Image 1: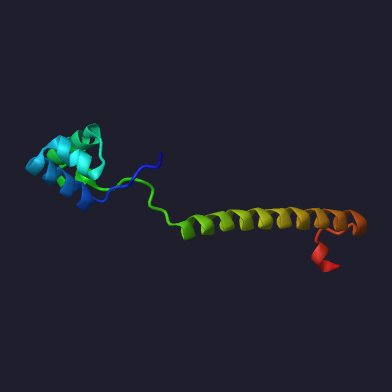
Image 2: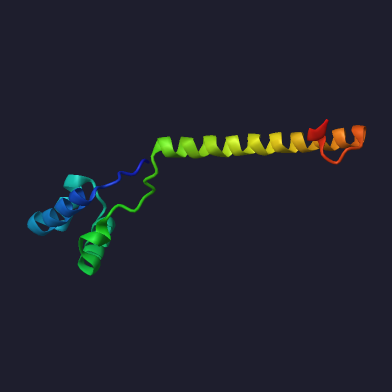
Length: 103
C-alpha cells in the first residue's frame, strides 16, 4: 500500500475538522487512521506547526541523478589517473629517466 504524504496545511485542516465534527468522522472523511490523527495532535500540541512539518527526504530527482553522474565521473577519473601512473612507470623502466616528460 502506498502512503500519502500530507502537507502542513492538510494536516492542520484535518486536526481542525477533528475538533468540529469529531475525530472518527474526520478520520473517515480524509482516510487517516486515528493513531495518525492523535500523533499529529500530540506533535501540534507540543511543538505547534513546526511539529507537523514534512520531514521526509526532499531531494529532487535531478539532484539524485547529478550525484550519481558525479560518482561515475569521479570513478572514471581515478581509473584514468591509475592508467597514466602505470604508463609513467613503464616509460621510466624503458628509458631509465626519472621524469618521463623529458623524453
